[in-house]
Image (cartoon, rainbow, N blue to C red; front, side, top):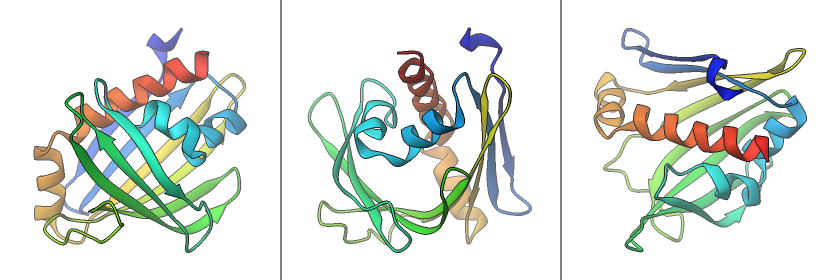
Length: 164
């Protein structure tokens, strides 16, 4: 069932953006919940064999999600997403950054500004994701770190979660 789902991944260097258009075989309510509830995010956000583990989450404008990507060897890479605008069930934006376990930003890595929009069709939901960067080098660094492969794998985990 999941094989014919739309997946477009575009790198727009001119505008310093990554655009992802991804379809999920589930209602908008279910897809929205998977992106906005930590107990669901923890089940799909990290590419296997990594796992995401939430330390705290406040999904409100001005709130943030603090989580670790935990490797099979137990190593932890911490990140936080600071929520900006939220339109319940429709869209949200967040500024993503690497940090330490207390949420203190690591300024050596670029921050990513995400805007996610959720649109329901008759049998599926399309999530449009736009990730913006201040500098072209920031965008290129994220791509070199394997963002496309890792994020694609995470989205495939979400397909499995939504089927269950």
